[in-house]
Figure 1 (cartoon, one colour):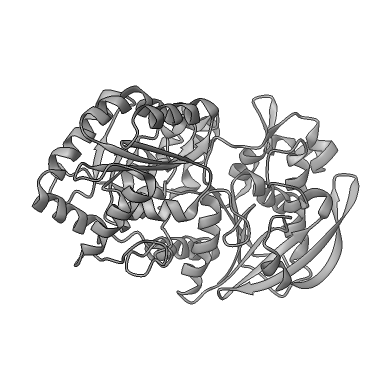
Figure 2 (spheres, helix red, strand yellow):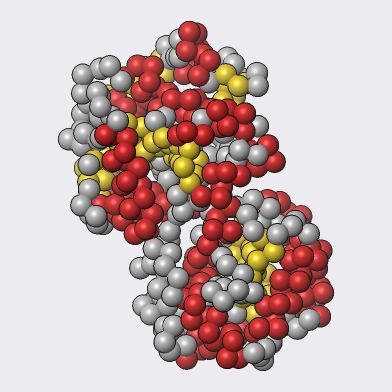
Length: 472
């Protein structure tokens, strides 16, 4: 099979979050199992000059954006065994940043149409086009409206993955004719609650819809999680499937990670203690045996930061130390700054996107706190387990699917159910109690580190899904 992954970002070229990790890792895992994969993303200004220098120009074409015809350059490079394609238009993509512009709708309308036009000019002829999130949601729509009966496109199947249903690509009805060029008799594909909703269009027209964890697939049928799309998703359950994301086990490998202070494994944890000692020293935290809780996250409401705000001082009084890294809403950043000032040696607050420090926290902390209100998949809890850092999570989405409470025999972390600070605090207390039992904690670390969170199992499930589609 040949699978083309279309996304707005992909490691190592452009990244702002977990989507880039998925589009950087999943194609490699599928290709390792004997199938051919390629990835297409926009050619952003931010792409590293060295990576850009390796690219080869394929051709330039024009792409319809409703009544306009826009220049489109196509570039390609092979990286890590995967063929990458880049859609170039300096007006749309030669900017500081990837998202958040007044014309984002037009920028990704252009990209989605360009991806389908590109197939006429490149050697890669896919059996499956796998689109991701709202930025590529019009690919299955355009395919359905314009391309599926064209020569060279017959037999292609479309898969659409919802990484985060909160971001749907909602715009006023005027974009249908002014930007998208969708005929009025097809407007029902995109109209929803008085808006044009790009994700809704993908849900209508894709052959399969996937989410990034099994739990998230049924959670988004509930109005509390679905941000308005539950009504359409309930009618499309027959093509909805949850597949758990994996992590890059080569990038996050305690036995070979070049960033951490000392290497270790589930069989020999000596290096873990050195990573812990070095982390405390680097962040100015007090030495000692008290548990160190790591927090690496975006500071936004749905990450459960409000729960931490309610009881952080109580956790400090319990004897916990905190290594915090993230960025986001000012109210949360100010909170952590205040806590670091009020509790020097107990709370270290660090702001920004700092991958090296993130690795050191994953390796050096004892516990990892993720009290998310919603979490489609979550990667940090799986990364922390890889380094023997025990997650404390709320049971939602991918957190529920990957973390089992240590109250049972096969536990690999600690969980709590409700969006309640005292419920979270109880999970932290249980974690501290087990931490104080060194034999129990060592056994828990070993179980966590030996969990398989690689992409291999996910790749098998996706391959099965693709084969099912192609056999229909």
